[in-house]
Image (cartoon, rainbow, N blue to C red; front, side, top):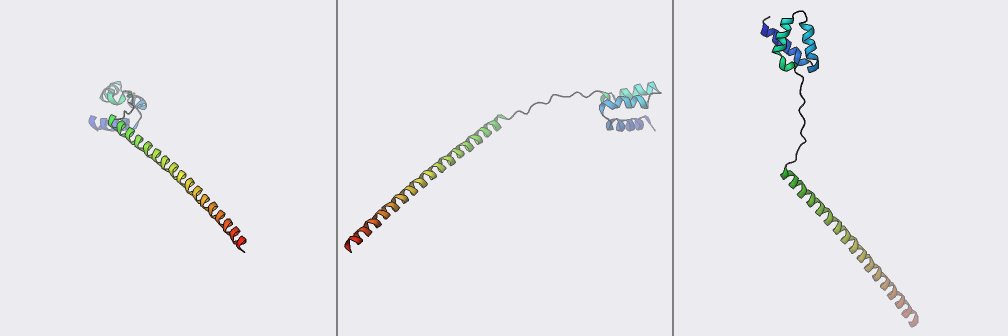
Length: 123
């Protein structure tokens, strides 16, 4: 095989290995020929270099997104407050209706008692 074909085969094998395993693989493969080992190391220097971990930047929210989120949050809080207020109004109205119904029933009971008394007096 030509040098390029050998390089392609070696490159394929190097890419299948972790960066930490690559140098050891070349050492084993070309241990008997230091000149070839040096040439291969030179050819694949980029693959043999230890990967440098780039610092991962924290995602920064877009100001427009922050504004939209704040507006949505405020709208949700306002809606929740409105729902609470409506529930309180409904509870108050229910209590008023029940009190009025109780008062009407008591007045009806008093009228029935009065009518009975009147009927009993007439007899």
